[in-house]
Image 1 (spheres, rainbow, N blue to C red):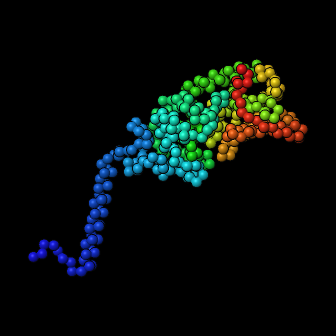
Image 2: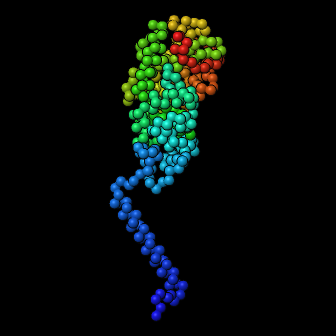
Image 3: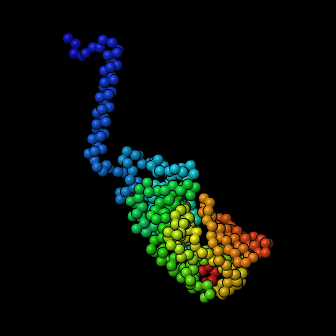
Length: 339
């Protein structure tokens, strides 16, 4: 007697194989369902070592370059918002206090709200890292989720509370977070700068916004900002990408601010009354958030094109009685000039 069954034809064999495949599929499905319902909180892997909780499904393999982030991050503008491959590494380096690693992931210079100094290069970032990213911020980014990041089209990706704290376009480009230590420094610099001005232009809610040197004729141009008194519900500028302009952060507005230009000719006493004083407004646009300042008084019109990437010169256009003259300008710090 034969121990093993025999099959009369190939058809019987195919039927048996088919039944076995179906049975195995049912067993697999039942097993997966059991694990999903039995574990209310499945284990997670983390992008940051040990104490990090940037949650990634355990089934995902975390590669050295964190390229999986591009698949986990919802990105409706993936073709224009820059790469996501460095986002995980940027978060890890900040969370772990790895300043040296972060410097390789930054696009310098990184602008800070005037009259604070910009982060000009890697050495500058190493020196300022702990002041910029304090313990509170590092703890928050340790507990960040990939889904917290927002795609902003041509302006890249942003993460953070309220109006976004850091921005990435392939690399780290903008830091809008200010630690208490930095905020104290900002307040001290503002106080010093405003006290250095002539008494006629001090106070009344004005704060320093930026300062330029006219390369063409040597004059100094400073621009101050003052918040307009409008109710939040009446301000149509309360949302949007303009928040990544660092100087606007203290005012929590965008576009409704009042601006003032004070001009001092070459060798003019900077502590005296300015030679020219005009009020105006700022227009911010484009993928690089370029700022353009407009001022007018009678038949005099002044336009100043701000510098977003400091490697290029700004443009100062002065039109009087219909005749325009153009000047090159470069950013400077008022306190460097009056001390």
